[in-house]
Length: 88
Image: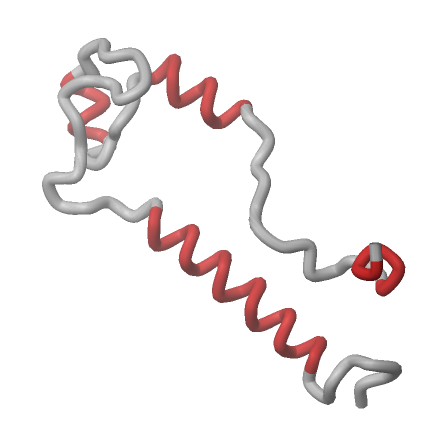
């Protein structure tokens, strides 16, 4: 049962949207046949053959990928915000 100005099923809709977003992000990270690079797309250096064999869809060298992984992940919409935060 929804309360206030939220429609019935609003919580389940938020859960479904969050799961759908996570599935889309996971699918985007799957290996694509022929999707790898010979050179890093960030710095242009060669990607070692061992890395390309281990990760056929590698698009970056190890140092550049480490830098990418260290960045904070910011994903889409805050679906858990309070009503007050949504009114601002």
